Length: 188
Image (cartoon, rainbow, N blue to C red; front, side, top):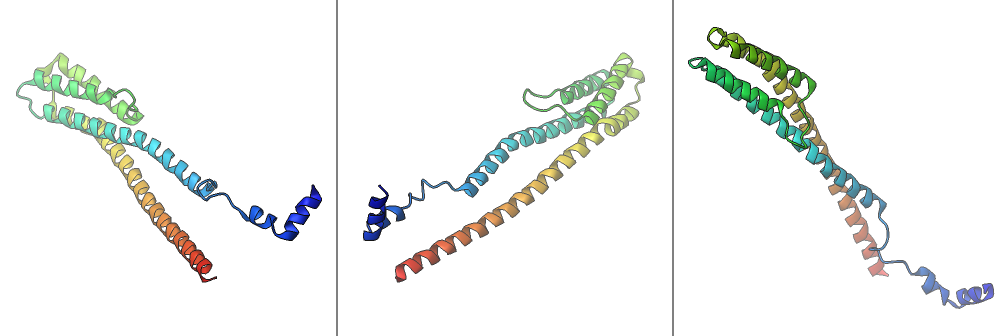
């Protein structure tokens, strides 16, 4: 069997068989596979990030509605009830959405307790103090969390823009190499 292979290589019959390469589509491209995997992971993470951002916006909206409800002390029962419902809604998270961070949840509990106390005697409630506490204990931390999450997203956007620039440069380099190789092969 060895002699047959040696004889074929001597006569040049083996050269075309050995020189054949599998088509490029069948060859594994590890860097492309890794990049594709990274993009899939980023897409999956995007779902979680979107839910967190939507949660932050919803909590802020409910707390602002509660603050607006407390701004009208003409009907104290209605104002306190509306504010209480908004604070309750801010603490609830939709299924699949992460709950508010601890500091926000802690502020929501404190405000909910103050609103429950105010519901017992709405006529003697100090709405200015209640609004101040709402802003300090719940709205302030919720807004800081929303800004922190948005800032992290902004950094991630900038990082992806840099990745896109690197991908574009890599594609240009690959294109240049392929073009030069084809030109070199055509000249022979």
